[in-house]
Image (cartoon, rainbow, N blue to C red; front, side):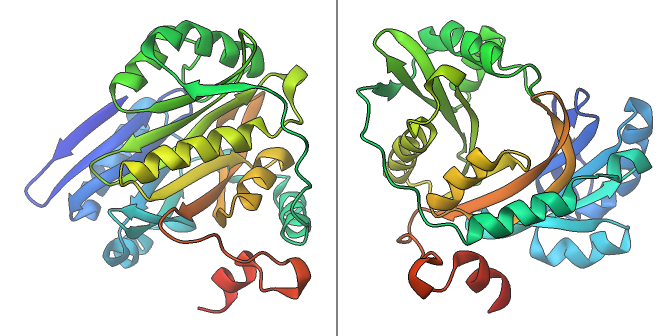
Length: 297
């Protein structure tokens, strides 16, 4: 539920996400800390367990003083300027996670892995979605995800996101929809989130997500949207590997971020600047994206 708040020193846009028991401040101008008490009151009223702020650089210190803590960043989120992802937990259980170190190990192995050999491309038909495809998309999401943080199994919701600027690409095996991916475009901030990626179990192993994201990236570049990010299940090697080998950069992990697949899960942040050529990987002794970005600044 998107809400807009305004006072004498700040205007902000927030997502009051009751399903995932979180508040996300997704855009603002002015002194975001001036709304701190209002955030706490809303959290108490709605049984919120976590507050997330996509913070501008100059506001980080003030938010730290209000006991927010960093969990990552999103490159170029604010019209080319990075956003720090700062969070505050209001429930101890929401902060606890047993899988953190195992998920770190998975990423370490991924950063050292070579790019997979491309398989012979099967003859899938890929095209952009139209509003009339909403029921097909909703059925695909219903078949793939037992639980999802947004109501993508509702055709009306899918159609609404299209009307608001989301771009979907679809992959068909003859006439059967077998995979989809979405770019949720924010024209105000000139960024896009790669999201709602789904492939039927029967059609995995054909790099369909990679092909769909590549098609979305081409359309975004044409539209002048160059900063893209994706928030992927930290437990899913496949999705993280797809993003990594498409030259997305790891930017942190959101603990117990949302309900997805079967439960509340940690989510990894990945970012890419489409205006730049792909970075070197760690293959052949070259400097990895992870090492360069995280340790040489």
